[in-house]
Amino acid sequence: MILAVGTVLVLLAGFVGGIFGAAVGALAALALSGLAIVVGELAQLLIDGRAVGLVATLGVDAAPLTAGPLSALGLGPLLGPHVAFAGGVGAAAYAGRKGTVDTEFRYHPAKQIRQPLYDRPKALAVGGVFGLLGVVLAAVGSLLPVDAIAFAVVGSGLLARLTVGYPVLGRFDGTKILDMSPFGAGAYWGDGGHETSEGIAGRHVVEPWQPSYYEPLVVLGVGVGGGVLAAAIALASESVLLPFGLALASLFGVVAGIRVSEYPVPVTHHIALPAAIGALAVGGTLPVGLLVGTAFGVGGAILGELVQRVVYAHGDTHVDPGFGALLVASLLVALLVFAGVFDASAVPYL
Image (cartoon, rainbow, N blue to C red; front, side, top):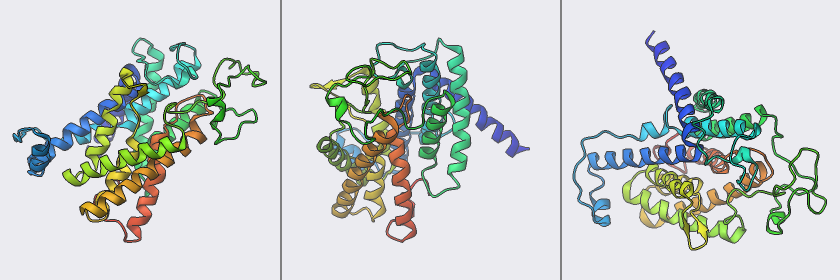
């Protein structure tokens, strides 16, 4: 009976979390998940006494906290990315298909994951269903040697795309799947022969996930920068999740449209988590950990770009390239653990 009640409560939390993600917008929900993880990790570090050096470095008084860690809230069946973010993505796909979202968005409206949908009851209900589905998919993913949350986010996103009746990989019209050059050339459906019968004239033929950060050298640069930073934070704090949470929390800058010079805040969660795992899984020594962590950060950046070119750039809904990269990276990490190269204790999903 206890197990049955617990299961019902978790599923109910998933439904409510999905509604919440749809109401505030998928991207804001993901940033809130990151904020909960950061608060939880910092609280645990201070309680454990491991954060004194880190906090002193930052110039902050190391006052002890009495609150318990909140990381589980940011990864659980209420605010977890597989619930709140996935619910928001599913709701956005539905609302975009029905034509009830922001028409000023530069891409297909079903990809508009910034917009809150609190005033659309049907979209909220769809969000709740996909939040509940995220709980189920994460339970399935936990039986596999992969990141269960990434598995659920990607699976939910693909199911949302299929459910609203869009092609799995998207529309091509002769464009090669990895070719981003039509975006740089300013090619739109309806121009230069790029016309179809689906009523999509006026859209970009190719829609990069991060329009300012898709060129190879830029991807490498962001991977190196994000990998070094995430690895350094992981080594200083002995926390795998803190860099990941910070990367997710930085999405508040994306939601707010903050720009540094002419560039928006980059999305880096697919860089931060592999970098943190790589840094700590080889023993946590500074030179080796920093080098391995940076390499894994670059690998995450490359995987993210490859995934976005395959499942996002030509598609009509949001299937998150970051979590797609984390899913692939998690399989590689699992293989390294099974081979005895990585320490399993540094991998949060094994």
